[in-house]
Length: 367
Ligand code: 5AD
Image 1: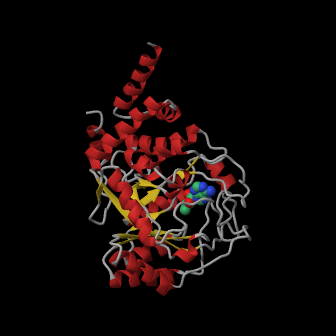
Image 2 (image 1 turned 180 degrees about the vertical axis):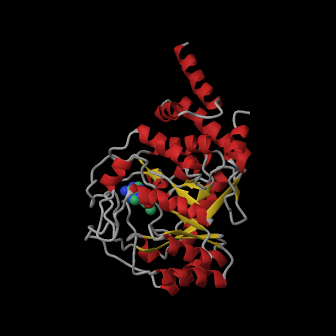
């Protein structure tokens, strides 16, 4: 009897047209298997109705592991002297991208690196143009904070998407996790302002939190989902925290795959037609089924790693990163396998995000 009443509270919350912060917290705190199934199932239904069965593949090229920052959680932080650093030459980045598009059939190339000033704006522009000159694809940038003028220049060169996480919605925690360095103030306000500017410039913009950072409560996670909505983010990039042994957060508990999946599902429920990737961090906590589980909980994007194999293990943001020993072909194949086993379709187009107006989305849900 008691159990039945409780389940119906889950159902009542899931039926709401608009979730209040307390509702989001309530859902994120659920733990029983049958309750989680209800959330995942609701999220999956909304995903199917609003954006369909296509899963889009983005190929990531991790082109440099140099970073000027000292983010407490990240293995690429400047003060990790144990890490061998590498930079790919512009021609090698361009060739890797072209191979990804022409041979592996990838439609979006995501260029990712630490915050590495040795690639100045001119060089990034040259790489973008070099890729687009030779192949038909979208280019997404995940290269950290740069000035608005830099990002305008990259847009002019042809980049159309940007990924820059707010990392945590908690301003105080953001301050603790991102010490100011000689190169950057690393402030929460600057980060959020940049995300808003990128949207204004016309970039399809992805952002989101690290899930389960030490010191982050479920309240902060709920705020993160609300923030994704406020920013009208096109994509919600988020994955569970995984402690790196050579950072100040060594030994801290990881964010957990369950919370990772719940965040995907509740984000889907609250942010409707936003794009959500099954991130590498989530996959790293369940190598066998992580991607498929994410796809069944509301995700619709996978980002296989197409970085040349010899650099893979050096891009060690956290240990145990999935696919570090696989060739690009294998990573793309396993992404496709996961899509098929989840009973979904491989997206054929570029997978541009076309978010509907908020009011229209609210009308859709709860109907
Ligand atoms: N665990 C999980 N995610 C991490 N990131 C950085 N370090 C970690 C970690 N230890 C994420 C950050 C960054 C993205 C590239 O990787 O959110 O923006």
